[in-house]
Image (cartoon, rainbow, N blue to C red):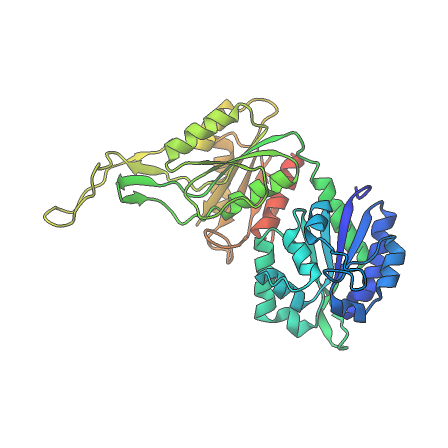
Length: 398
């Protein structure tokens, strides 16, 4: 999967830089073309001559070559790459990447990269566990970067704990898996719904919920990375896709969302209903603001909204896959299984508000995937970006 790929290997100033030579060698053996970009401090741990000999390319470290004045374009490097791997990634560089502190060639190249970025942290255990490092890694995940989690073991301080850079073989395997997955959905059309719906009470008030849209947008981004043509029908949210090419259809109400889904569904291969659609809407929304002065407390009569997943399930054709979501507070498994069968779904993703880290507004989720046979797979607490990848892997295996 790495044959002919252009890989930027970013190396920062940590003792784990000695592993970068083996990582470069393994990438070359796998058929990749490797360009090393080092921070100045990385050269204290491993020489550019070693890395240049392994890759067959001059190592880039400064913005220009001192004796000739030749400029090294971080923009050109960012456009050239199919992937950027920063291994080892020190706490300092992770902080700069999270904050956009572009004071060296590696960080400016990272900020210019249009390709996926993989970050392999390496530092002492207390640095790894520090709240600033935890926050910065979470920030990088939220940007769509792939974090290759540090391993546990003996560290340079001779202490034992989490902070070892993953072995080069593990990093190469992660890249192989990524490029294998990016071809899974090539040529497929994927429809995703995301966010809440707002049902008007009057021109300034509505019935809604706390959905942020993060899970749906993470799925849309991941599907686009895997080569799909993605349309996301989105209720009112404050986020946008991070992957170019995702088409966004903005709607407000459940009926508007249904109309947009019906328009797209006939040409869709995979539909993932992730939106938190309001079950009810005011029967007679007021055309002017309801005033509390001199008026009785209003009585709002509700009517049922259309069930979007069930509507699409009734129209599903052979070859189409339909996936739903169920956010439950009690009798979770029974309720999710009932929805899956009643709405003619191929799979349902169940999460419970009783699980810490799951639900609305969080960057993480705890999901149980249930297929049409009733077989289930429970995923541990993980970032929604990683949960999106697991969901699409499961859909691919249906």
